[in-house]
Image 1 (cartoon, helix red, strand yellow):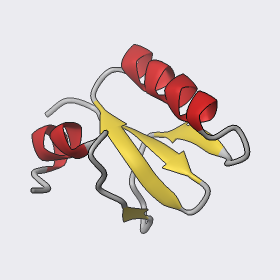
Image 2: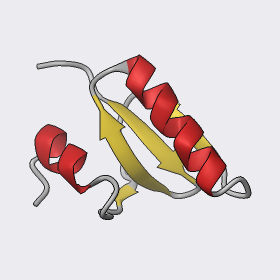
Image 3: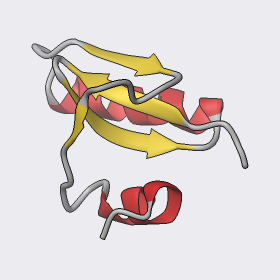
Image 4: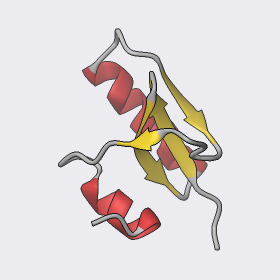
Length: 67
């Protein structure tokens, strides 16, 4: 199983990927889209809720089996 990288926005997970370089790209996209929120890459989901959107639904399905 590959390591996953989670994009956290304030108090929820907004995306996930299996590559750190892709996680950094996603992080930049989220920051450009909403510069007022606090985004970061983290290495575990923890107890944080995952929010499914049109933008992240395919990655959530692929990496976390969330449909």
